[in-house]
Structures are given as C-alpha cells and as structure tokens.
Image (cartoon, rainbow, N blue to C red; front, side, top):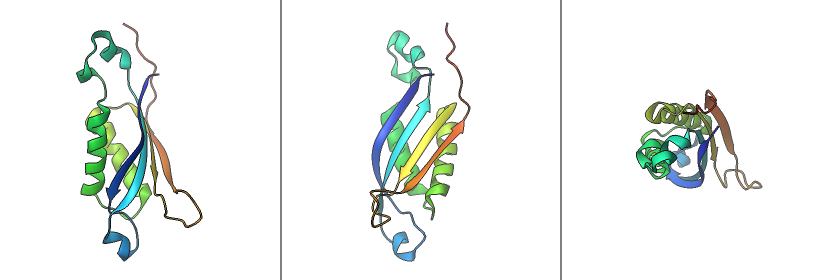
Length: 123
C-alpha cells in the first residue's frame, strides 16, 4: 500500500471547552497519512492523479477554522470524514496534537484511523 503523508502541520484555530479558549486561537499540530496508489501519478508524472499535499494542508486549516468545536476528538472525526469524502481517500490516519495543553507534557491529542485499507492494483 502506498501512502502520502503530511507531518507536523501547524495550524491556528479556535478549539477548547473553556470560555477563554473560545476567544483565542491555539496551535494544533497535525500528522496525516493517506492511502493512495501513487503509481498512477508516477506513470506519467501527473500531479492531478495524486493527492496534492499542499492543497490538503490548506483545506485542513480551513476546515478547522470553519468548524470550531470543544474537543479534539470531535475535530478529528469530522476532519477525517471531510477528507475521506472530498479527496476520495480509501483510508487515513489522522493525529491531532495540542501542545501546551497540559503543563508537564510536550503535547496531548488524539489519533484515529478511518476507511478501508486496500492493496494496490497493478496494471
């Protein structure tokens, strides 16, 4: 199985349960791994046949800012569903970290996997 990934994407968004958190932007760090048959794009060197990680990175940040929520769990579920549908990704692993949320920890967060793993089909 081939994968396209984005690691350490820093975004600023509104997230959190407490009222003060709803009034500020906080940093989230996102790691995203997506199953994709990269051989199709590689065959003729075509960007249009792969996952454009620059576009996906922009969409991830925009989605988080369009959909403020209290919990990282909620954001992860909704973001995964959005990405699976918009890009027709068969499977993804999404990790969202919230650095500084716990005083003695570098970061806290959630990691989920959604979709179905598939073996690459060979021409």
